[in-house]
Image (cartoon, rainbow, N blue to C red; front, side, top):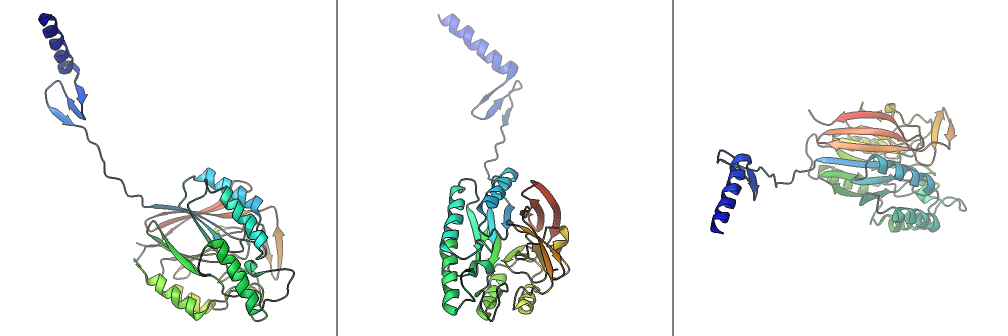
Length: 321
């Protein structure tokens, strides 16, 4: 019996010497040298950021659902989705409830972070005339209940990048009109503070506002305090300002880089518009939005056609040397 054990031991040693085996992460080779198996246990820092920006849903949950499904097919692990104003067609509870239910039903496939900004239609009730001061506050409260925010302007940090949302503090009044945005001195002061917070030269800062600073549609002013806002943002070339509101068909030409900061039009989910001077042509079969990828100071902005499920354009922007 002892003889058999000795023979078996010799055979096992022979196999080890001839071929080498792994024992507890160490390779014992035929030349008797130990080779440590390299195992990198350090988690690689993920510096990539991916998010979508959808403007002007107008309560069209069918087109929103189509956009959500299409974006999921592009990337099932986005970091955020921004609804950039005109979430509903009228600021009514029933419309907010339908939209909120749609987002809830898709919670398992949507990003954990959903940013909801206010637009001019969120101040509307077609059964009423111009809003009084009390009406304005009621619409704001309806929006705050939907978004979970404490103000029409708010901010959040996502993977080290600053997302700053601006919002009109009034809407559809006799003085302001039905489409323009009003930004108070308090909000503009808040914006200055937020832009300076943890500012790094060349690191993108993402700013969102439903109304535009400029448009090809004649007579559409957009922001009452456009000059003041432009002056503030111009101090930060890292800013990328996303605006919606006009519904203009997506084009790479909608990205404006001729200022110190960058302006990007988001397109519209509900329907698109072709400007024709003071007139506009509505294209109800269209539905568009943006998909954005960020790597360091490089930003890749992609216009998406949710109906054709195809790209409209891709544009790379660099915010540093």
